Structure formats: structure tokens, C-alpha cells
Amino acid sequence: MKLAVFASGNGSNFQAIAEAVAAGIIDAEITLLFCDKKDAYVVQRAKSMLIPVISFSPNDFASKAMYEAEILHLLEEEQIDLVILAGYMRIIGPTLLEVFSNRMINIHPSLLPNFPGLHGIRDAFSANVSETGVTIHYVDDGVDTGPIIAQEKVEIKETDSLDSLEKKIHKVEHKLYPNVLAKLIKNQQGESHS
Ligand code: GRF
Image 1 (cartoon, rainbow, N blue to C red):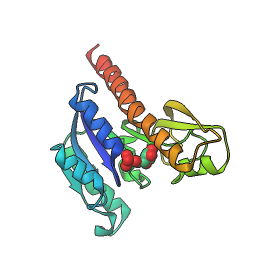
Image 2: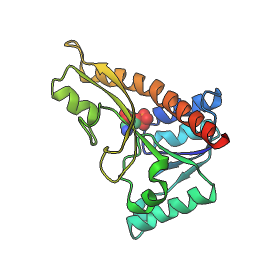
Image 3: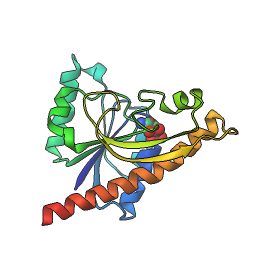
Image 4: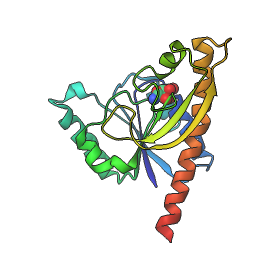
């Protein structure tokens, strides 16, 4: 099973997944990291783990469709089975979705359908709700709307600050994402062998 991880920023989820692959918890290989920002910290993380990095920006292309066609070409060339979005801060367009819709997974830091969008943690904190969480879901053409695979709740205590809540959410993410991927890949491999 060949994975491509897409990320745009810090890459802590990328690292958690890569460590789970290295430890044999996820039975797959990370064939490449795709990053739309060549200076993002995730690029350094991948390089230090000897994972190939491919990086270019939509600004280098005349249209989003052409940008995505180049990514698609890469994924097909490398025979990627599953695309893992881990803090990839762009909406996936039809060029990629048509081919990868049921093979593309995202993580979002809230209990969807609550608080979709760019600021899931902050929005939940500002709304004064008593719990939020983390969602893993398939990607569709909406913003954080695809079919849900797994969720885990995180309590928001009176004493929590936005910063402490962010830390709690990320801690859950770094366990949940690798574990869900490990199960999903194991199930898919079981199916293809039967
Ligand atoms: C995570 O909170 C993830 O849920 C969201 O973007 C953030 C990425 O963090 N989609 P990192 O780059 O993995 O550290």
C-alpha cells in the first residue's frame, strides 16, 4: 500500500503517521510528501526521515485544474493507493477528486459537522461548548463535509485556554490518525486478499 501525504505547514500529524509507518503499526509506505509551500516545516521533517518531498505551488500554474493535473500525474506515476491530508490547507478540486474521492482522507480538529473550516479549534473554544474533538473523514467536494470514519471527543474545561485546548486536540490527533489509518489499511488489505 503506497501512501502520499499532503501537508502545508508544521507537519506534526505527518510526523506521527511517518513514525507509525516506521514502527510497523501502519502496514504501508509513505512514498512521498506533497507540500504546496516549499518553506513549510513539514518539508524538513520529511527530509530528516528520508521521505521524498515534492513541492510546488498553485501560483506556478495558470489554473487550479492545471496544478491538480500535475499532482495527479505524480500520484499515478507513483501508483499511490491512498492520499492522506494532514494539514493541507487547500480545497481539493474536481481534477483530483474524480480519481481519488474514495481514496482521500482528511483530519479535522473538531467534532464535525460542528466547526468546519480553517479555525475548528478556535471556533469551538469561542462558542463556549463543553466538548469538541477530532474527526477523520473521507474528502468530498465540500469543506470538511465528507463521510466520517472516526471521531474522538475532547472535553473543554472551565480552566482551559485556547492554547491548552490546542495542545489537547493535537495530542488526540497524533494518536487517532495513525490508529485509524492502521485499521483502515489492514481492513483493505484483508479485503484484497480474500
Ligand atoms: C491539524 O490540527 C489538523 O487537524 C488540521 O490542520 C492541523 C495540522 O497540524 N487539518 P500539523 O501541520 O499536522 O501539525
